Length: 432
Image (cartoon, one colour):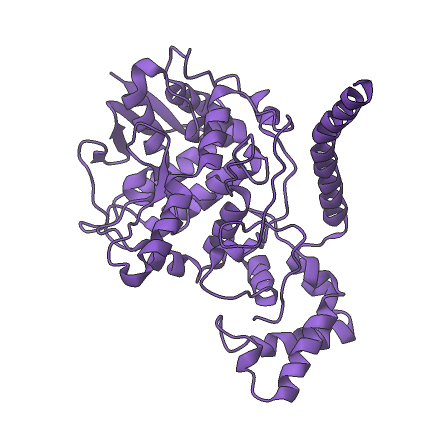
């Protein structure tokens, strides 16, 4: 009897300790990789200085020069195919093969162009694409300690989304970049065009790349009191000025929007990052395969300002979606539904948003069933998977009930935000 209890106790301890050891080992693995890894721009510069690497790199570029659909089966002749494989095998030993990019870096687009040129994967399946971005080791608790403006929805008595906007105006960086996106996102270009969408998107990306998360997340993921769900959640939905950044005259098909996104290096990269870091896992306590809410929120905010910009739906629960639907999907209806549900029914993302709004992180290392994953279209993150290098502005509808454009002012839920020229561009909130 004593031996049985002892064995049970040992098994229970191992059940708790082993997942934790796995996480610690993985964290150490990431730190080691990050310490030796160059961004793809610097890795290319280093490769081109070495004759052997430079020759193989130029050969590799010729192999994929046929376009994004290229792979080795399209290279004429077995000898040419072998030469391409030899070049890619040689580059595996160079810094290029392990390079990554940093979100918002100075030469981000060039870095991503190099990355995708090296790591072209089979087309048509974003779920199997790895993120080109360097992992960020962070937890939500690091943000919560700096974000006193966030309260628990169940006990909050104030509109935290309004408080977050006020807090942004008190921070020079947040105020600067918020003003910088409000202007292009609310300035009418012509009778037919409400705004310059390209400039609006670029300014929004800069806002979420440059502003500290305690302020940008405070506005985007703020919690709402039960007594004021409708007005508060609508204000949260209006954070990104959706009449310009989000809506279109007609909703495109989601698979067509996805295909369009993949033709742009930044959009493709941000989408791949979102699929990797917000992958749901029902057997996980957190609801996330990677057990990291902070990474998921960072990846979600990274999509804002791309053609795949998501936003909150007017729904009783927290649900987001790009501006698209699955009409006219034909035989691809199931695939389209699966794509949209990764946004609308994503428990990992929903839990991450709620955790931020609550001001609490999740204790993800409590005893739970081991999470076992397989390589499939629903599990993009495979940290032991070795890459296969051998495969190679519309006018916008306006809703007068939500936004009214009047010069440089715009009305949101009976609130007018006016840009006032002082020493810096300041946004003043006037409500009635």
